[in-house]
Image: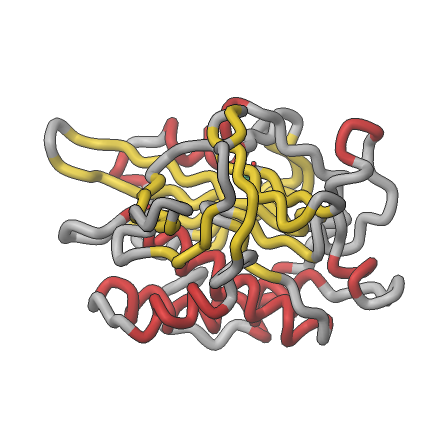
Length: 268
Ligand code: BTN
């Protein structure tokens, strides 16, 4: 069971995670926060469930996570002004990737648009949802799943998933410490992202899988005829590539598979 008191001892933030809801079991922390009226939710609220019965993944997929082994939580952000949602989500994952490096000594990378991968295997993902009040953005919900100590995965994801524990040769990690380390880092990153700080973009790109490389790409299940060079992410969080014809193509929401070489594939 997640030890909230221990987590709060590690937490050094000003506002992020200071309101913390711990749920033993919930269908999905994202679904729950999206269902509540705006006046129940404050900026920086974090809601964590030890078990999700119907965890939501990207593109209508399920998020599978063994109860008590991993981190499944959602963060409420009430930006107050216009934000580049996709870039903010990438920033959120950059802070996660850096926390993973600090915790494991491994070298996970960001995979556009939303994952943290180690080699070809996924260690974490984010599901970003928003709710509006008329025209006005009421809340952003960043739902984050991180594989921490799980070592046996269901057949459907066995070849695609990895946990932090596996990244550090079976050592068990303290979930409370990891989450606090992450939120401590994320609070600073979010402030920088919301101020539009450009350095973050460099950092996102330096940590992007395939950055600067010529790769074969499959777009929405359609292989592109010729390889493209990954130019990086722009300030909107969109992925830019250079084609063999010297054109720059920008992907916004497409489903991209990057085939680094014939033997290695990174897919979303
Ligand atoms: C992905 O497919 O990569 C996104 C996974 C997001 C999973 C997290 S777990 C906490 C939150 N609640 C959900 O139902 N989904 C997100």
